[in-house]
Length: 213
Image (cartoon, rainbow, N blue to C red):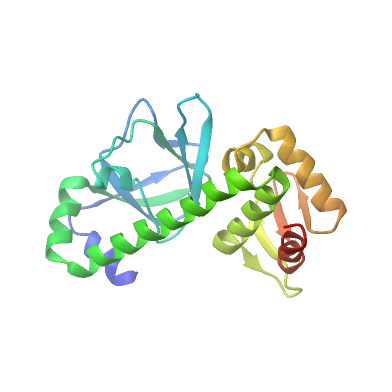
């Protein structure tokens, strides 16, 4: 990824945002794609019914804003900094030039888009076929895989995210997610302190998911 970052640095600019700051939103769509140098960014979209759906949380060395790259409308998408972030902003006109000159970049971008497409397909299947507790468990495992730090006891610590954020990823109300999280905590599957972090007992939660299929 270092070589890729160096390649993209040609003609790009570095921008910084603080926690809670909007990078782009529904009223002001972006004309860039972004590579995260440091920090975490939440990307969400506005559904036809007006509800917010969290697409994912992206971190160091990951792209977001690819709807612009695909020449799709991005006026229903919003990106928000979850803390201090440093980004490399690449105008769509520039990235097209770099892609033509660097076949490796084209392959990397294709792989990223295919992986995200597969992940979204799994989420859609879960939304259609599974109840909220299972969807919540899958969300916790997802973020543990992507954002977590493994501790000595095998548990995984993920940065704090509110029940509202989790509900926007799971596709339900905050109250339902809070109920699921309370049950998981009583069963020893997770533990958390508000505004600190969430500890996921990964293997136990995975076993719970398998046993409650």
